Length: 265
Image (cartoon, rainbow, N blue to C red; front, side, top):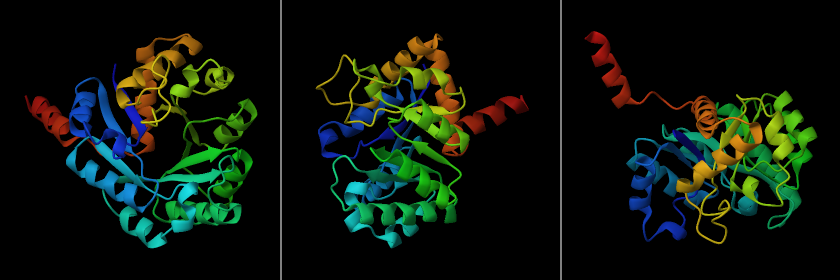
């Protein structure tokens, strides 16, 4: 199974004891690409540092709504120019935990959405209990390429997102008994969804209570396959192609070289 992990936090302390060995294991176990997600200055910088070490790892820059009070536009502008930065995110609104004032969250989200348009980068959206407000800000700022990470909306909101040409992404939360995502998963077009773990958070069943990692991403594909009535490999291939296009991953120089060499023969 060929997989594309679109949302990981492998720079967090949860992985300090085995980070490099885990990353190597991921890349030797069917994970072809990993996007490591920044959510403040420190994690954006550490994600970029990690991505520079691994050919098939890329990073994002952004300030999560919980970090909105520390927003520094200059950091986002500086890192957005880096070749290994492939998106602005994760950014958005979180009206569940309210760790930043509503007004600040809205302003910082709008500012970063504007920068994404300015720098022609897609947006990774954190949306918790703020569906319509996230939608309205993205729409107002003219964002053309966005993915609602760990999608939690209903069918009506999913259709709104799809109508704008945006993407949705699913985590291990869809494997939980209380998941409300089955109907959404059924209606999502084949070219509009991606897979993620959001590790170390949201480990899929039967690993709840453990540290999550990209090694569990196949379980997300398997659940979607079960709901859609297709094979896990088909789900993985579709999600892989969608992610590759969405994040505009550059051609692999190794594969390209091999292909050209074979072509000359």
